[in-house]
Length: 565
Ligand SMILES: [Zn+2]
Image 1 (tube, rainbow, N blue to C red):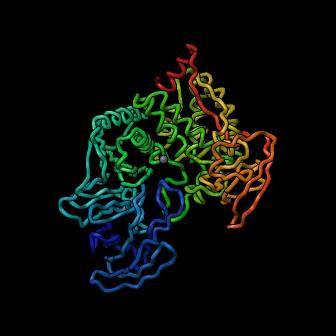
Image 2 (cartoon, rainbow, N blue to C red):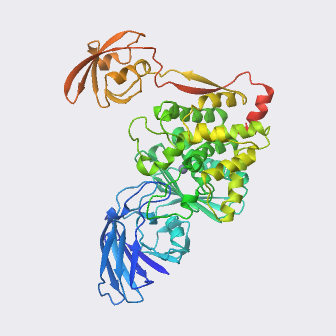
Image 3 (tube, rainbow, N blue to C red):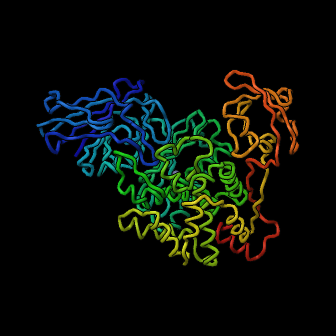
């Protein structure tokens, strides 16, 4: 057993003091701090937040140790027990961070707990030195102020929210108690609505997947006063940071609140349990490259929204709007011609969570969701509504998770092929490992459910005609093969068009095709002028989805099978 004690020397301070009692397996043994956290597939280098590492024997005599790489310490201890002490600096609240102050502790053990590299499956106990009136919201077993995990894997996949100011709602679906914990200034005046909606999508998800293994599940909500949107899935809980608190009861906030919660809950099955083989189990010591981000995040993004409409929490118009948001993000990204979703998944470890260089890659969330949509519609049509992507996910659950193994990209495709009844090589080559446009396939499929896809020009005249996206006066994006590409670079600051002040003319100017315009702008504080000739325009256009007004009877039936509306 490994025992941790967490305390704060000064409750107002940003540092968390950690003490660990460990039983060395040999005289020279290694301890490590994880280098990344599940849910964010890039190195986190958490050791940079750690200071004052020291090791002692049971008589408090200092032990020799050395750091052998950025997150590993080699300790020499001939005693049967070793004490390790260090401090962790906490300053950020996001979906995966640790934060302590005098009002609450928000603990993601993955970024602050050192582990014994050769014995991760022992019992891990954590004692929290907290005031007596603080409540602990956490998926782990609790004994007073102590949390107990059966392994390091369980410990770090079970974050905790601890405070005497938590608001708590609870509902039950089948055999499971679902807890909603709120930290921050969330006004829960509509709690009946919240409980109603959560109950509906939870029940629908469990019914769809057929099984929920945990007796308790915890939604841990941080509701900061600032704008925030971030969620991370865990073993039997999720951390969701959503702000600003003052907008908690606005329609947009509430829809985001439902959307992110439904998404994170579906991760209970998809990735927490149905997991890529490359991460089964997780290796916290290095990159865990995998190409199936389109399943882990794409399918989850698709289902997060889909479950809200299928369970009756949201209506069809809302769902169409959500698909249009995905369309906008996908079709305005020229990276879709350059990098496949499989390669973009691999590159998560490179720059998956930042904008990255222009038009290099696609989002595993966005393109992943669109190709999940394609697959779902194909299966529904092929089986005449008898089957769907649900069957693929259920089959992955029984064939992989239940057999205690992870799946590969081939396994996913093979499972889908077994459900649909024909080979999906074409789907794989075009949409997973290839960069074929998705719109042609989507148009044909959606038409059979009574939906139309229409190409819509970008609303901004400069963007549409020149291929230039501007924020205030600064160039932020340039379309490949556009007139703008010949003259501008990111960061240029526009001050005039045809010698008229840019800020006055930008919203009223009407560009003609095949016409020359002069642009005055600053590049690195140097005034420049360039003449650009427009062509046919059409840059940054996107498809929009519309429901057909004169929907046919057979389309109505298929739509019902797909969306339950
Ligand atoms: Zn996710």
